[in-house]
Length: 287
Image (cartoon, rainbow, N blue to C red; front, side, top):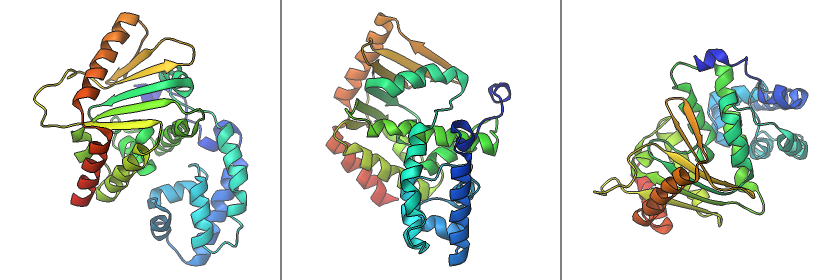
């Protein structure tokens, strides 16, 4: 089994040598939370995370995002103690290594340096768009079951990849997402609502375009698997597919051209970015 072949996964802090920082921040967070008389669930509602995520943060297993520390400082009346650590936290995050399974690291390196990224998602929200709670729900239900430590590692790695949106100059990014992906409430109603709002937030970024393929379309140029198209800096475009745990990085120019052609046709058939935002807003209202 792939899970059995991998060595014991490093926690985020172990991997980049910041164990002390994340452990200390977790202990401080717990101290201020308990002093305020809040449970992990109650505090999680204030900062937008579930109790399991808060527990992981307090144990130093999960990265504490800067925005969480900022909200925590206000809600827990920490008097600036937690907020003062945000610059050091950002510095630690900037040094963090991405810790993907061995078979995925080649693609991850290409993704991190790409100047163009185009994604087709036919059954799940793409990893770069997932909220922490959505990602946790995805990994928690994967079979065979992953250990809790591995789940936290994978979630942290997925969030690390999302720094792509913060790069400057920004890469050109586009998504074509099947409508069914918007209707599958992974993690439950609250997690799904937050995920749809995340899609709306990303969709208004200047460098990103998100389009939905309506389920009611009677024709479709790609009924195969999901795929990614990447253009690494100073290199030719490549494609990446993955099915049942078998990844494939495609570099043959003719194969890549065919996938790019399908993607172009799908973009022409899909809803426009504006129509897509309207559809997502409607689905949010209906939840």
